[in-house]
Image 1 (tube, one colour):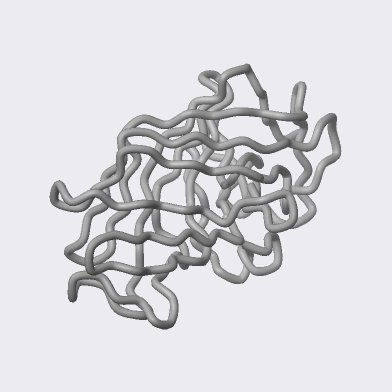
Image 2: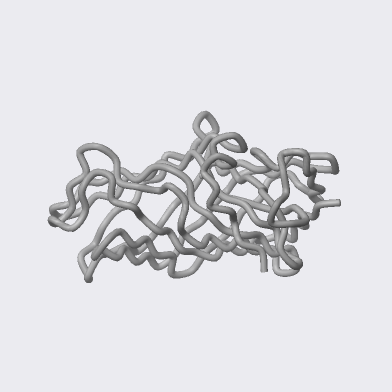
Length: 200
């Protein structure tokens, strides 16, 4: 299975900030290219996504991502796709309702980057992430990158955590989260229509 690389140097050079895809070895470089079929607009849904930061665990009932993928062959792994809408429903911490507002827009997309391949999966990350979590006694913005891998056979983007996602300056949440606290976002986004990503 292919897992998104945690190499921040690659992340900085290959993206600009947050979801990922394929190559043909863990040591793949920026010269690797990818083929996306058919590419274009996509919608993906996740059940029970979770964000963990220290002792705080944010559970949501569902999430939906919308965006676009490049199409055809010869595509670079950096910014292979973009997420322009990311929404969450039914979010809570220890049963207390919370709101998650992601900053993904056409003008400020989260980027899907491919960084390599493992077995039949595409390794990568999502960069340029920025999302605000608010609720009783809590106001935190998380920003950075998160790792993952893409599975063409099921058209599913597996977001696995890791990366540089962290609470930003001014973070305050029930005494559990402060600025600089690392966060892991875990979710499996199943695309509503088949998309295949491969590397020659």
